[in-house]
Image (cartoon, rainbow, N blue to C red; front, side, top):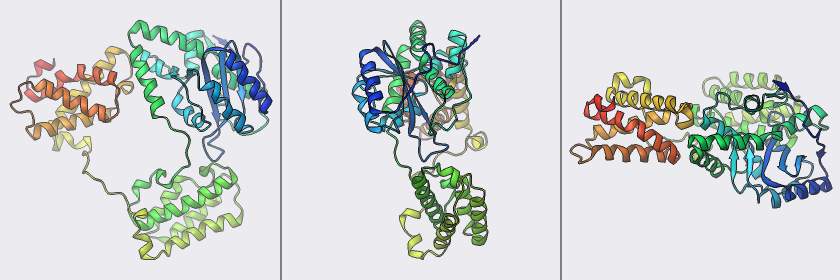
Length: 429
């Protein structure tokens, strides 16, 4: 194992002027093949998850480190070149939103993490792939650094450049192995799905507050809304991570106390503001307490607004699977059969089950099977196996599974489902 801390061509400079970025754009345009891309963000320190550094590498061009924050217009103009090429990223779903916010969008996406998952690699992180493929160890200690700070020292520039140094080579090797295993189409479907699902970075909304669903009282939801809005305004103004001002879990906890003990909620808010990770001026702390006090004295008609009502569930949903064996034994039988068959196929393919499907989606399919049985939907059917195939395939398609995943699961689970339905478990075996 060899340790590499500096790119082969040396430490690349940070390009943060229009002229430097235009030079990089011309060089990338003259290169050939896909462009390897990575980003460094600072959402733990700054207001949102925008890119503070973009790393690009292409054959015949070299590696370039771009500062999109310093020169957003010049960085956006790079789209004329990068949008005409295929991209190679690792864990693309984390980088695409901030890149799309600049108007960047690939012709086609390649993701080395997805490739590693479908190949069944034990380690799917970039550093693990570098060690397994090339026997190279790179620094791993700066991923959570504050990439918004300037200047960036040589160690950080090297760290960033190494993230794209071997991406093209890794991709080439992965594609070769995928072809040998007959899984190229699986990989293509997964990459296309990630790209189709990606959206540009957008402004946050209070309804995305983690834990909000636990708040059912209108007053609690209004408090959560008002504190979130106050936090968002301050965070946006100071370009700070909202969590460094007032943690989301604290907002939810405070909102949960207001109905039973408003005074305790006020004390808890003051305590949370006192321990804030950033220094808050007395005026800012007063603003938060005023917001809470005003919410506590809300007029009844304010609380009746749809905005503060907890969403109603349109359907009763699926009961907790832990009670199925006692209260829904036939649903439990379908779940056991489907999960066992799915585990077996994942083992046979030597890939993780969650690369194919989540256990939650397997249980949803099992519940659908039980509902079909309970309604006698397939009693007397000329071809019950075809009916089960249609039911399971439609269910998994609606849950967003890709065609390859549906095919793999149907081949594995249909005999198991038929065995439970008919009571002929030899059909399953």
